[in-house]
Image (cartoon, rainbow, N blue to C red; front, side):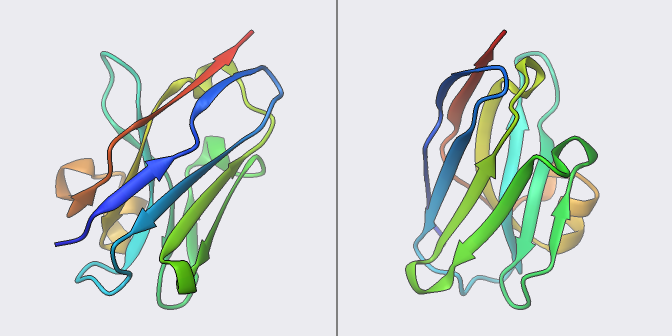
Length: 125
């Protein structure tokens, strides 16, 4: 069992920045990737970004490339999501997640092994 504790959401204006954090009880879990999904009411949960905890490979959704950066502090079992140039379309609940790499690449939230609680990100125009 892995517990994920997310924090760092908030409200910013268009063009602003936020940093999300997710502390895991352990980085030694069956799945090999940790990262973030997001969900808007009425829409399916979608992948944002994932990072392989063993080798640091990253996967970014197209809309996140160039604006979002994922990183880890393995000593603290913590993953960070730096979000820059935020847009109103980025408004969503962001969920920390742990799963196999291909579930991030394929944006398959139904196969995610572990979820953290969501954190709300609101971008006002």
